[in-house]
Image (cartoon, helix red, strand yellow):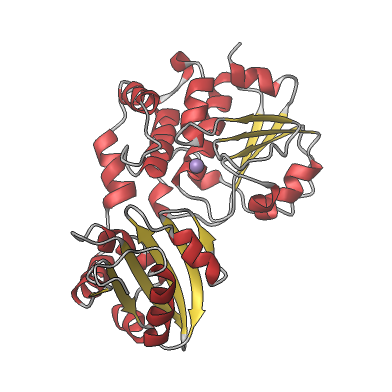
Length: 321
Ligand SMILES: [Mn+2]
């Protein structure tokens, strides 16, 4: 028996849940597990519960049957949490998790305290989808399950680019390609594709970007009226800050958008030395060393001025100021 089915034991109903605002690894790992369980246990009932997720993942098998009626009164024999680093991150799924007779947590976040009865956390693995890949029997992975796993791995590694990518990650990627998935189309359709307006607003943000602090920092801002003009919402602005970050010579990239009058959502990226999570937490936000965010009230001038004062504490300038 494979290691996943050892976890299932005698359960006849399984709920699979992920974290709030599900990303590619969350959706991919949940659907991969559901497909794998259905293929290997035809009698087992499995339901996936997730909050709203991007339409780019709709093509994955089972995506249309994902449930969002978290208040279901049903008690599952087993609830498996995927890609969630703690109980809070389960959001509404927590009620299903806490009602279940038995709980399992599979994850890859280093901060995961192990909040289920059975926990399997691999902090050095790129994604929960990679964790699952190595728990599954390779021969029992269908093309549909392979597509789900591949989506999860490419989204958490930035298409095998981030530093969490290992030889083992590439091995998993290669073995999934061997299943016959259309890997290059999956990458384009779920990772790189932008709508026309998304490209327009990206172009606008790049054109109006400004460098400061001896050209080591760059920022751009999108106002509410711009969003109305282009007909975009906040998720259409994803990726703008990443494009700003790769500008030559830049250490910190900042992207702001106006949530309401004089309230700005701030996204920051750094390249080498600056820990932007320290800057973000000064303003009540958080994140990681190289990617963080916060919300700041004031004019654009105030926001950038306040951020600069914090960034400069970590950024040696030629002028010594
Ligand atoms: Mn993940």
